[in-house]
Length: 215
Image (cartoon, rainbow, N blue to C red; front, top):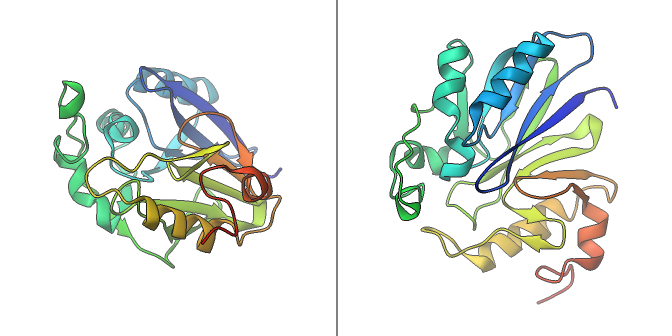
């Protein structure tokens, strides 16, 4: 693999934050900084990495709670999220933090992305796919030359993202998984927002919630 990926888990939601960089490079991206930003910042300091972009797969609180700390530490790094989830960043009701008894308010996005956009940061090329259903504007980041997807809360190992939050829809989520993720090469590795990594092929064959050929 020509890139390095460090997973840092934030409690209490066991959310996966990913730090991604190329070997021998000092530039990194951070994907979905969670509710415990200090371990992320500590890792970045230890590795002497500079964050050049902060990416959110979606706007739920457990994936955006560390945005403010990342922006404070790396003010030049743009905060990027799917256009359909932009308002979740600053609205505790929509980002469901208020439902859990606390208010998360992120800085607003510096850049909004949509289906078909491409991001170029830290020597990485990330293609954007919109897969709503867990949240209204959920996106995933596809690093095609590495066969990797940073998938947020769309597809998990043996499961899928919950769809009972505001703007959720199971039928929309399932259609996106089948139409956009399951068509990727079967060896594509999915780095999810919670739990262990999986592959497109494994989920296409065994996922009980979204079987490939269901009507």
